[in-house]
Amino acid sequence: MSVNRRLFTDSDFEEVIQKQLKIRVFQNNHIIEGSTVVVRFDDSTVVTQSSVSDITYHKRNACEFFELRRQ
Image (cartoon, rainbow, N blue to C red; front, side, top):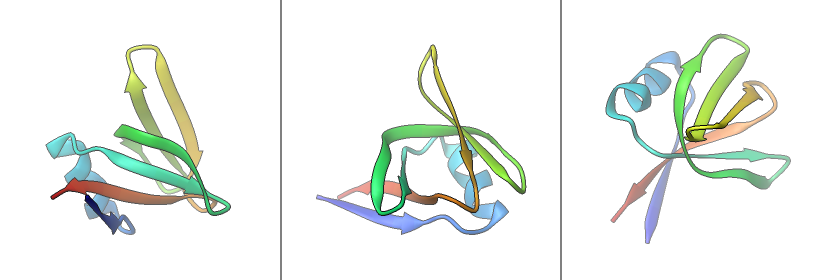
């Protein structure tokens, strides 16, 4: 089972980058990224990478981001 922690602040995103934690990305109540890491972010965009060639740009105000913690 997993526990999700919502990422709101810049410090939340900095923490998941430093620790290379997996996240989930939701848009319009649908999961669009299941197990990915954040590689960069700014005020409007979060960049995730799930494999070497799979980089995705998400609008920060259009998506919800959750840290994925396994129990």
